[in-house]
Length: 260
Image 1: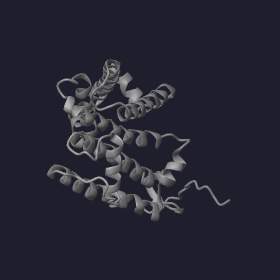
Image 2: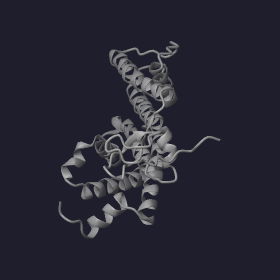
Image 3: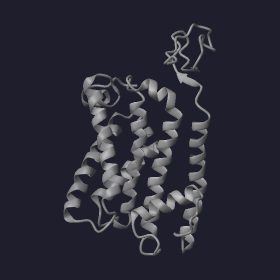
Image 4: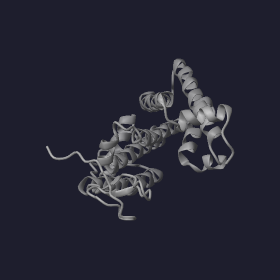
């Protein structure tokens, strides 16, 4: 691997390095992610006012710069295109800068919600929050995946059913339908009237139930292992009450909260 120099080195330090500047830079990106997710959920998927188009261009420009910066520091560069999260950002950028060409696919902007996964990855590195995430890492991970799934499927339901299904007229209706299908509640007040809608409901139920049960399992079966690197062999995962490394037998000092 060639040594990073110049702009590549500076960008890599901001995205992956340590220090006050890189720390606040990543917090700023995190805040931007959640602001854009909230904006895409709040703003209409179509029939936007002129002021909204200006906001779209600004948000799209920031996302594009972030995308190009991550591509620039990626090594090897082809791996950048192997991550589905990056492809989600590419789709979002296209919908932001070409609203007339892809107006029917504006709902894909909600794919920005997958950036919530970056929030989980970054916050886990923050030392102040590390003990909390060590205790609840599995639950937070499953909740994040489930919430992102609900947002994305609700957006697809809204975009494909409005105007075709009189029971779904708002994004709230789409979220309501997605959650009732996912939990197999089935009140019957909203039903799919076409073949595509029925297949969409089947997909939502099958995949959503698996995510929902994974979350329940994480809650019922608490994680008994924590991340604590062995200073001798480097093994990361250990039992919460371990006093010796299972791999090399070296003494372990795993921090615990104790009993109150």
